Image (cartoon, rainbow, N blue to C red; front, top):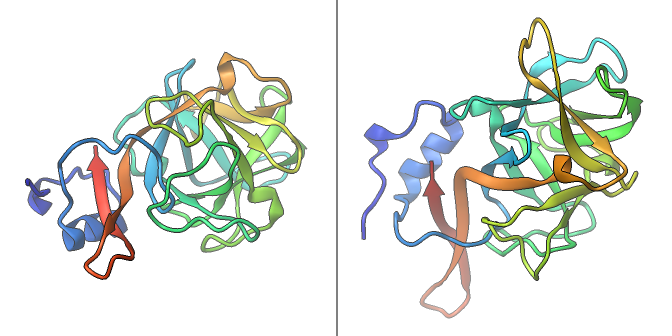
Length: 226
């Protein structure tokens, strides 16, 4: 079984993830076919070919919170998000995320959660999507429901994320920002499903469960694809 060489890890991977990959000696075996709790991944909007992204740049209007955008760049560490549970829904590390499950998506580099509310987005005047909280802790407006067709969130499947409190869907419709984030796309939420609200799991580190000697579940094993 092959293992990941820490000397050739992609430079775009955040320092914390580099440490995790080196500590766990990741298996490069068969692809894990579903998204699991505790995984760190990039999300691609299929229609517009942009990855969900954030950074320490605040909106100049609306909530004034940290902005969330879509970027065409593949190798950007600011596009990594951690899949986590909510205050009401546990998400045990390594277990598959179920269709209909409520989750939080935490931006790895800033520790803020994907968030929405009734402020208007700056370019399209749809519902604003931001990043909110501190060290992964925000409020109930950070919760999203995974909408998919089967029992679990499959990695090859196009899925939607419905904001639990407002029922709006995470979307991109192509509007582009000027300076200081020139060319990045607006990410917002919309009430109706469409091709603009379809997302797919892409690069990342995927936690996978394995059996330990005592017969209980051990969730410390990871599967990585860059």
